[in-house]
Image (cartoon, rainbow over all chains, first blue to last red; front, side, top):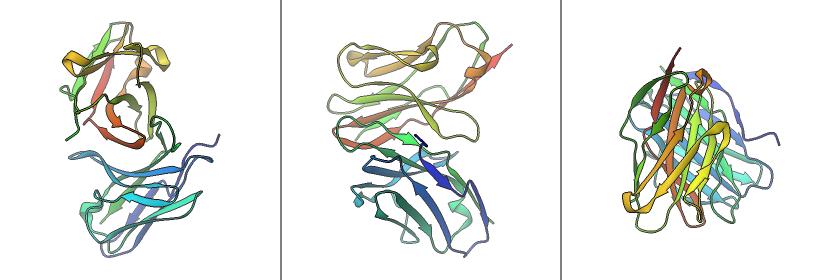
Length: 114
Length: 113
């Protein structure tokens, strides 16, 4: 079991640039979650998918943020254009869709927007 | 609305001492409850979970937690802390078959030699 894989681990970009974060969930997990972690707000759920379909995107802060899950083994979170206040650690997690929740987290992407 | 409160932002204990981290939740039904640990630069690792049944649950690394419905609490305990336990600990609540969890703000644990 390779766990949830996120890339890149670190991303530094300039304000206004497009940023794409990537996630590969654990094989067989049908639910995928994107969380953002900041000192001020802690861990916030941005969006989650069941069977590649977005279920709840109410946590996505604004239209600059978008997420896709084109297949069961890949998801992206895109920020366009990026702003300094987007600087945070972004976590992807996956879980089996049936039964009680059991989230497995990736190691996160630390995003710095200058 | 669901919420999780971890009243202690930072706790320092001596190595070998006992530990209790507090967690209170607000939820209208029987919740699923979790404790996660995060080491610097790492993701969150599941320590233990409560779904139903015995209210005292055992987890990895010698941790346990007790669900007390009357107090809406799910406190994490360890009888003897090791220096390697220094990390940030997060309590979380979930519901139903949907996996989205609501996390507390975390408690940072420091361990004195």
